[in-house]
Length: 610
Image (cartoon, rainbow, N blue to C red; front, side, top):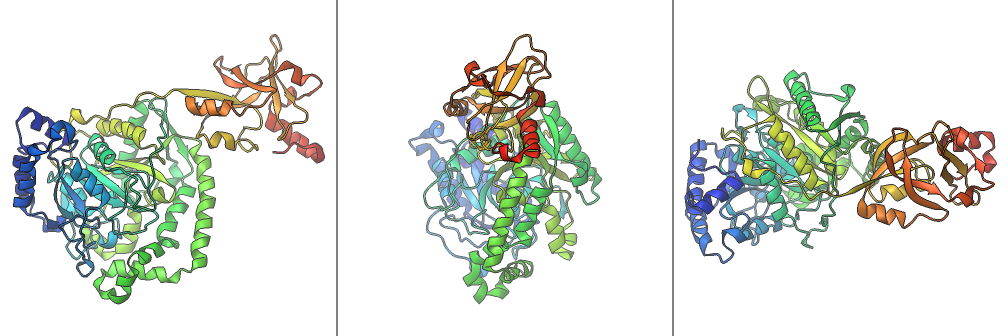
């Protein structure tokens, strides 16, 4: 057991009660680095004396421990992110340069009292998911050094998992902030694109890159992410958080259908995924199998399509003049970008947009996904013998995430029978980061008890608190707002979530309202009428979104309470009685879509616009 727990909340508690000082902890961190003895983890270190001096000076800062959210917390940075005073190499010595200022994310962490320890190794130019493509050596899995660490943020993950630092920054384009977490029993948080500035980051694919966080727990990573998060104006792809809450109870999570499950004959990995799905269901969720094909097709675009051209664009001048300075596998990948034309780039964008539309229909089935982080792992010798294909295998379930603008949190899922860890990732829509963290923390603690390879139990101090509950309204739509109908976009623009399709109670009638554009029905309740109920769809909106929606509802329609076939009352469209006098009674069709279909087939000229 180490002298100090480096889990952030425990460390801050030790500082507060006087059982540790930042100077002691930082000095101990360097002892741990020396004891670990794997030089491939680090590319450069802040001199021990300099880091200890910074720790010693912390108590003099006027903000004090209560004003510095990362007071005395040691951290590492992937060496494609600028840190003033240390060279940035991107794991290519001939490319190295000396930055004069810190990357935005690094500066925000230092401002919060964190202590930089050094720069970590990576797959060169962040091109790879395995951790073996570096002239500085290959960091190894903390549980078995014959196996890969995962990449490209290899050194960052190992530094955390081995207990050398409390957290580390990585980057993620295709899964580099998630795969190394899975293979080392730690957490990897890949935020929504643009939330953490990439100013001061050597780009891999500038339009997709994310700065990520590795830590022992979701709570620790979430703390760091919030501090580092900034739309600083220096990142052209920067964005400001527009929170998109997910339900924390009664949630639906997407899982792979049997035909989409690929584990490359790793039965233990498949079993760990099944176990994670079962545990998440036991935490109050409903598993929903979905079609992974559009997501898999989008994932293939990242390396098989023109997006690889962005990797060449990032280092084109250097690559053209120093090709032999680039790692052979990276050189092969980057050189392959030259085959793509401007036409190919646009065609790739068109293809991605088409896949987004198909994927959006799948998203209506669930609130977030639970996927394997990577299907299996490999020995370093195996990866070196087949570097392209085996690397591609690691990205089967990660490559689509940035292309389709999702956020993700990778958490440990347990270990195979040989003692090697693997993980799962919760993937949500953009800006769902905060509520996804609550769910990921619950699942992590239900699956695994220990932090990395330290042997420590996960700290209960780092539990992710639930955000203040946000009120929702369920709305039953009956006509032009149904899926496929002309006003459905008014729901999707407000990020409404599909709940279910069902019928009303039996005493409702439906009328085709005359002279409406687009064509609309009117729903009327007639006590005593014994029908079969009218088909409706129930959609869930936040209270503010519901208020905005109601403000757009035109007369003679209004929003009242509609009773469903199971007796539940929800808000829904109703019509004023006067508007249906003389209107066609279409109750017998059972619903607006059935009526529209029959009308189109029977007399197309009178068909409503749909």
